[in-house]
Length: 444
Image (cartoon, rainbow, N blue to C red; front, side, top):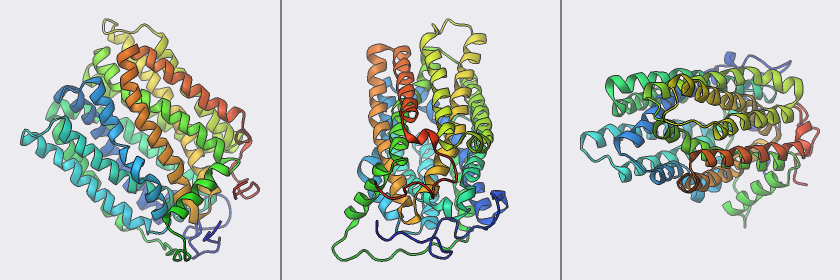
């Protein structure tokens, strides 16, 4: 392993800019993290509102078919097919904070183009696809910068709490956003909601720009080395690490199943079950409550049972809602009094499981990897996830066309179960937060 930063403050080490000593600090008292959290929170609120608008726009305004819906879902991750590993390697050498500011501004402009397209009667499947693709590129750069940036804002011992705080605020936004989005769609229509999201992203960029943090510039590559060597080093580190390997495989399988249910749930509820738009927003809002509860419990669960078992618990809970939807004979003729509670309960459990596992998974990953490999380790896992999501989203449309929604959702539930089994039969199940320095941090 080459060019790995040391742990000394000022050397670009994780947590070098955060307070030290004692137990985990309340991360919202760290000024840099408070700004990062604020920017992330309002961005999540705007995204939750815009998410409802996107689904309504796709289904009701442009009248997309199931195949077109799967294509639009896949386009958001196409950039990862071509740029994911490259951008991850670049983020281990670029400053991450300016990248977050620039990408927020870019996404604001992209979303603001949607009302313009509507007003000029230019909104169709192809123009919307171009916007989605642009957002995918910008999100790739933003994600590649955000994950390795967080360890610069708080100490390693506080990473789970920091991720939990981010998860809590995101799910509060997920609770309020869909309900607000469903109401606003009725009042002003979907296009104007994208104006709201553009303004939100502009404010987020302003907050992000106020963060003061020292990011050490990496040394130039040794003679004879190029970006391909950096990428290969990151991949070797990730897939030869005895803890990161099973974690990566499990999350890859999770993303395959997630791509199916994410692609199909909206059209399944709105079209197959004929759920009204206001009820659909309410269902997603209940999911937000589950995510908040899961993120609230995540630090305590991770501390009590360990990182590995906390992640495993989340994986197991994930199976239940989708298996239930696959087995229940729900149709458009089913009473709303039954449909809404069942769909809301499914979203609640699904989000609950994510809230528990996400903070523990991300905190563990960020604490294991040295700073000089953070971008590449995260990019390796994330790029594979997005590639899998791309093909899974396309597969979702095909399977739904051939087998129907219910059978396809049942297949996703089975894949979620396999993702849990990977952890059961690996050393990751015994991993605990704080043992990162006692396990092998180098390839084996």
